[in-house]
Figure 1 (tube, rainbow, N blue to C red):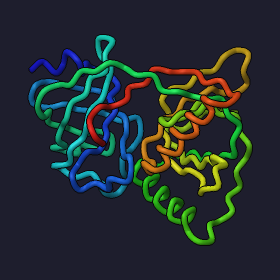
Figure 2 (tube, rainbow, N blue to C red; figure 1 turned 90 degrees about the vertical axis):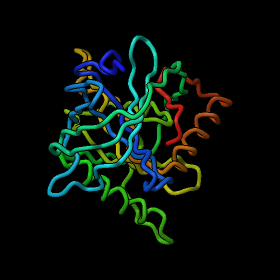
Figure 3 (cartoon, rainbow, N blue to C red; figure 1 turned 135 degrees about the vertical axis):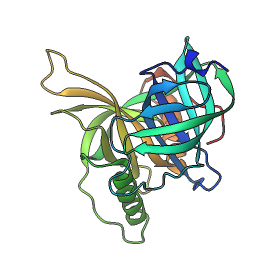
Figure 4 (tube, rainbow, N blue to C red; figure 1 turned 135 degrees about the horizontal axis):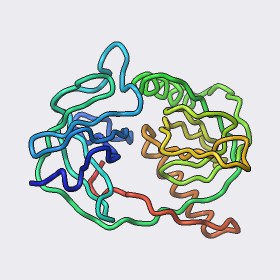
Length: 246
């Protein structure tokens, strides 16, 4: 099967963990770019280190859903990790046929919410460990008082857009208080795009949630629906929303 028709060189691909042994309460993913694709394997490279001293949770035999956009359509493929080549490179084996689907619209809203954004030049595995610790603390009987700052965001269930004063990092830990009488949402977010205009002193950045509790995803969806029925106007941005269970 000509996978390279849809997974071309330098094409961006989202990898979503669908392994049987995964924690199904967590949405776990990351992004890579195609270095090589043929019918036997796909070699991907990430913009950041996936791990530092060990391979973290990455193990040969893990299965991922690879999602991308090709020829104006959403394309997804199940694949198995066969080799961790380096902290930034993975080799996967395609499994079965491609699935093609239409892009759907995801509501977004301009909001001002308390936010803590912690960017660092750490590996994804390091961010995941810190994320687990913070989530546990936030759900404790006596959670810590984090210093969150009212921040203007363009928010959706999949990520957010924000204006930053300086150059962004590839990964950041985001804590967002949805002001719904529940613990703040905590997520690992990866940088998807950034741009600087002549009129701006800072940088406008788009982030995608790559590690987040699924119950927090549902809270974000509920917030968008609530805003849709209120005074805040929602914009709709076409996002690749997967059809396979993850």
